[in-house]
Length: 156
Image 1 (spheres, rainbow, N blue to C red):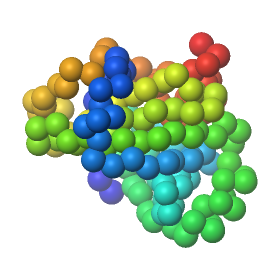
Image 2 (image 1 turned 120 degrees about the vertical axis):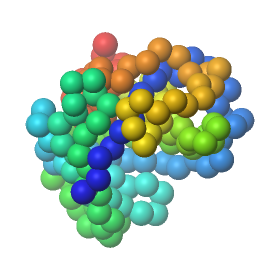
Image 3 (image 1 turned 90 degrees about the horizontal axis):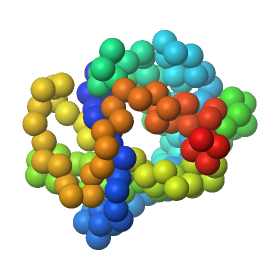
Image 4 (image 1 turned 180 degrees about the vertical axis):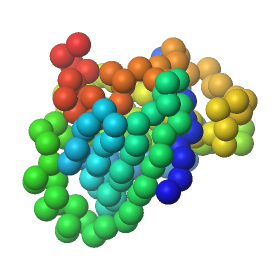
């Protein structure tokens, strides 16, 4: 078990694309979307993962997380029994200072939404903020993938 410490931001321009060091396609869905825990299946390019996340702290910055690699064949079968609401997105990795930002460009029912996350060693850790980073939405549950799968961005 590990703790995930991250901050989440909207993205205000596509300038991040030219700075990207990689791009991957992700499809994911949820076996469970309870407020105290989520259980997610994700296929990322040619790998698949089962991820369990606990409830976030009051600021939305820290939560417990377990992630296990599984076969893509198993993941595809599990996707068939997940709750409704598949998330599709392209993820760009961008190195900024000593941190790597993950920028998700959503497709499907969440098209138009672009969100950046940065993982930190502690809640107080400072990090460089690139010019394309917009409003902080850390702790705003509407931007959690588990919520976007139930209440897509295009329906806001």
